[in-house]
Image (cartoon, rainbow, N blue to C red):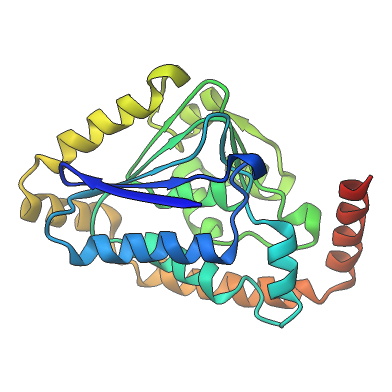
Length: 248
């Protein structure tokens, strides 16, 4: 369900579960984390590129898989946290190409990417509060820095969807390109980055991204709040309503 290829210095990480709109399971999170961690250790990898399927970058967590983990008291789950920290602390540039749905973690992971390309049919949305939960992936720290506090509130708290052009205006997306050339456009940028002097690129990127300690700390803080919220009456009621709608 996660396909990984490395060519021309580019590690491609493709979420490939189109029949479920690329809803992510714990095993998928673990595979993506391993791919990013491995890229940092592999001198032949210069840049990582995260892709989805046509019409679905990712619909976010697989709810059935997520609820199984939540029942154990783990909160987000160790695989999710591992992935979030891997993308947050990646020592190599990370790009993403978004076509269609980018829900929940599909939205928040973009805040850790160095460049994001989106098709006109991209839809970026976070349903955390609607489920009685709180945002994750250090998005409460990164979104205000990228988008400004008002737009961040609209995305993370109001839960309003962003289309590709709105995400571009907000600074979350670098370029909007037609879906037919989306992946090739992102690959072309990845090839250009891969051809840069790696040591100079690493230094420049480190200055641009700043100290990641605060980002990693916020991931832990949000995770603790997320775990606590899972046991709340609000979350229980919201998930019960969600499952009832799904069955209906």
